[in-house]
Image 1 (cartoon, rainbow, N blue to C red):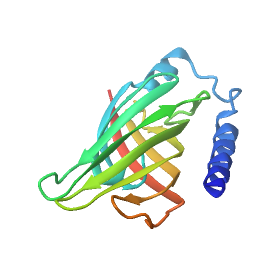
Image 2 (spheres, rainbow, N blue to C red; image 1 turned 90 degrees about the vertical axis):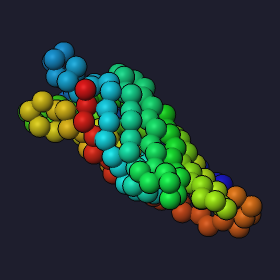
Image 3 (tube, helix red, strand yellow; image 1 turned 90 degrees about the horizontal axis):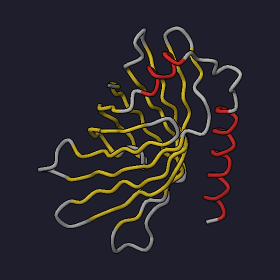
Length: 171
């Protein structure tokens, strides 16, 4: 467990460094409002608490906190899903057609077929990258530290670093 704690501490330090640019976050209120786009829907792929396999994703994000759920696109064959809580500790960095807003998250994903279930809890860092003139398109790369648990297996493999990528539309 100390190794996982050490890796998570490094991720937190990277997030703090990314978000400690308030001098660059001199966005106007209209820029700030366009970045916040609180309701988002889309899809994601990865092996992370923020997104598991290929999933649909729904998210609500306010100025400092957010939450999302992701769910299986093939529930009749194999069910998976999960959710995470996000914290946006710093301001956003705005440019003409791109804005960057880093976040810290913690959550869990899991899967279940007829016989076996599994869980993938953890946390990490990511960023909302709003692109285009309207900044309605949101790309969310994330990197996380995780541990894989299979139900009934005490020797489940550990995957300390994982990640995901989401593509969403903000409303």
